[in-house]
Each structure stands twice: as structure tokens, then as C-alpha cells.
Length: 169
Picture 1 (cartoon, rainbow, N blue to C red):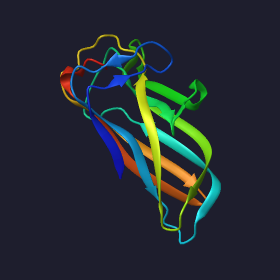
Picture 2: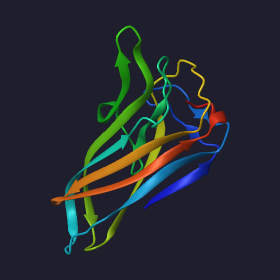
Picture 3: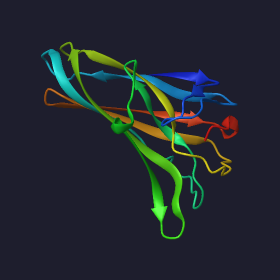
Picture 4: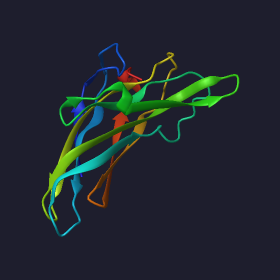
């Protein structure tokens, strides 16, 4: 389960620059809810959380680069560069191309009631650079959030939907 927002969104550019505001309605996740399948409560346990935002499937960009998405803030705290990665595809002669795949990783203390849920809020920003390549199809970025806490691995997924005329990628 996740929360999302649809609107003309303003995104900070990770690593500086921006912000950029979309020119069309973009659907972005604003958080997720992870379920604790354990019969016992988890109290103030250190958890490792990883947010992976993949490249949009089915879009072939053999040259040029476009922006993707990365985690700008997590539970209300801005992320730092060392906690995020952005990796483009690479090929000989062409160099880097396409959309970046991004990862954000953190370790924090969380508490979750027995058979309870844990809401996690995050804000996305734009990752990578754009070389001005024209993207003429709607773009869907897959988002996977994995938390390892008290011996449990909790996973949930969501997406970012960007229409053709958003002009942010």
C-alpha cells in the first residue's frame, strides 16, 4: 500500500540545480506502508531501508540521457549524496545513455506494533542529467522499497508516472 499525489509537481534536482516544475500532471508516491507480519511488536530496532527506482521498462534510448528519480528526503529528513546512487547504462563509444537506475539506503530505528503497519514518508527528486532527448511516450518508473528489520524482510512496490508533456525528464 502506498500514498501518492497527482499534480503539477515541483522536483528538486539531486546534487544541485533546479527545482523543475512539471508541465503536465505527474503521479508520484509520497510514502509507503510496510506491514509487520510478526506476532510480536518490533521496538526501536535498527532497520536497513533501501529504495530502488528502476529504469522505465519498454523505452529504448540508445543515445542521450534523461533524468530519473531518486529519494530527496526520507521521513522528513533530506538525504545526503553518500546515501544515493544513480547509474546509467553504458556502451563502448556511446558512453552513458538512457535513464538512471537509482538507489537510496539508510539505517534507522523503527518501532512497529505486532501485526501492525509502519508508514514511511519520502519525497522524490530528479536524478541524473538530461541531454535534451525527446521522450514521446508516457514513462513509468518502478519503485521498490525493502526494509530488513528484526529478522524480517518487508517489501512493497509503487510507481512514478510521467506523461509525455511533463518536460522534467
